[in-house]
Length: 602
Image 1 (cartoon, helix red, strand yellow):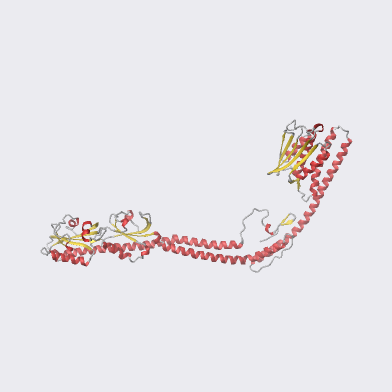
Image 2: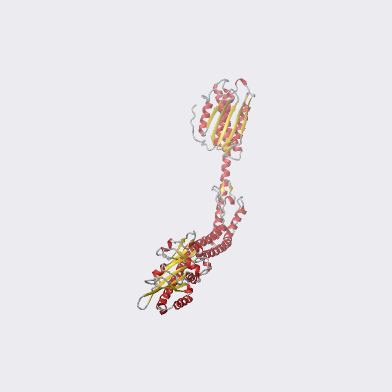
C-alpha cells in the first residue's frame, strides 16, 4: 500500500509515506510472509508429527515389542519345562524297566539299557546305576564304575523320591567326559529310586544332563528372530542368579528378576545400557515340579525403537519436501497476489513529489485489489486537493508573518529614533541621558532579530551566532574609545526567536557593562563574546581583560537586574569569575520555556 502525506509545504516521498513520525520497524514483504507462513506451517506440522510419532508410536511399539519378547521368553520357559519333564520321565521309565529292577540283572545288561538311553538323547552327559550301598555298578562309558559315590548329594536325594537338582559346574567329571573342552561344563542332576516288585529299594538311577541342552532350547526359539534385532536371552535360577547368558553376567544376580506384575519394561543394566526387558518364569509341567527358573529376554532400546526412528526420519524427510513445495507454492501465490500492489506502488513512485496525480491501475485479479485501487485513487485525489489548499494558506501566512516581522522592526526603529531625539534634548551629564541610551541599545538588539527573521527563509528560528556577531559589530561602531576591541567567537547555532530575544538582551547588557566599567580612563582591552553548544545546553560567555569585577556577582544596576530576570525567564544560570578581568557565563537549555513571565524589580 502506498500513499502521500502532506508535511509543511511539501509532500512526503512514497518511501517516507508510512515512516514519518514513527519509529523504524522491521518491514516484511507479502512474498516473504507467505513463504515463511506456508513453510513454517509445513515444518511445524512435520515437527509435531515427528514428536507425536516418537511419543505415541514409540509407546505402542514398545508395548508390542515387549509383548513379543514376553511371548518368546514364555516359549523358552515352556520348552525348558517340557524338556526337563521329558528327561524326568525318561528317568522314571528307566527305573521301571525289569532289567534295571531285577536284583539278579547283570552289570552289562544294565549298562546296555543306560547306554541306549544316552544314545537316544545325547544331551545326557552321564547315566549310572548305583547300589543301595553307594557303589556305582554300571555307567555309560564305564565312567566311575566300581566307585563309591555315597557322598554325592544327588545319590542321597534319589533314595526316597525322584530328584532334580539345579545347574552346577562339573569340574571333575567334566575333565573325564570333555577332555578337550576349555570351559568347565555345567550339568543338571537327576536321580530316581529303583524298587523291586515288593517295593524294596534296589538302587538309584542318576543322570547328569548337559546344560548345553538349555542353550539349544534357547536357540530354537530365538532362531525365529532376526539377528539384526540383537535380542539376547538369559536363564536365571530361583534366587535370580544368571545361569545361562552373556559371559559377563553369568553367575551374577539380577535384582529385577523377581519384580512382580511386569511383562516388559525398559531397564538400565549393570553395564549402563538400556534394554527393553521381559521375564517369563518356568512353572513345571505335569508331575515335573520345576526348578523356579526364569527366562529373561532383552533387546537394546535403540534397536527395539529403530522402526519408530526410521518412520520418524521418513516423516521428517517427507515433511521437509512438502515444506519446500509449500515454499514454492507460496512464492508463486505471493507473486500473483502482490502484482497489483507493486503496480500501484510503481504508479505512485512515478508521480514523484511534485503533486502530480498518479495513474493507479485498476486490476480485476481479485476483489480486494480492485477495492484498494479505487480507495487509493479517491484518497490521493482528496490529499492533493488538501495539499493545494494548504499550500495557499501557508503562502498567505508566510507573507503575513514576514510583514509582521518587518513592521515590528520598523516600529522598533521608530522607537529608537524617538529615543535618540529625546536623548539629544537632555543636557549632557544628565543621568536620564545614559538610561535612554541603554534602553535604545536594547531596542536595537531586538530590532536586529526581527530584521534577521524577515530577511531569512526560516520565520521560526534564527542563527543566534550570526546575531551575536552583528551585535558586536554594531557596538564596536558606537565605541568612542578605539582602543577597546569587541571580538565575537561564536558557533552557528539555530534557536527559536523566543529564546534568541532574551539571550540577545543578556549579551547586549553584559557587553555594554564591560565597556563601561572594565576599561577606565581610555585604557586598551578586549571584550570577547563566545557561543558554544554543549550537548542539550547553550553556553554564552562574555569576558573582558579589564580591571575585573569588584563585586561578585555585580549588584545594584538596572542592567544587572534585567540580566538576572532574563536568565530566570529562560530557565538558565549565570556565573561570574574575576580572573584576568571579568567573565560572565550564561548556560541555558535548548528546551527552555522563554515565554513564562518573570517579574523585574528595579
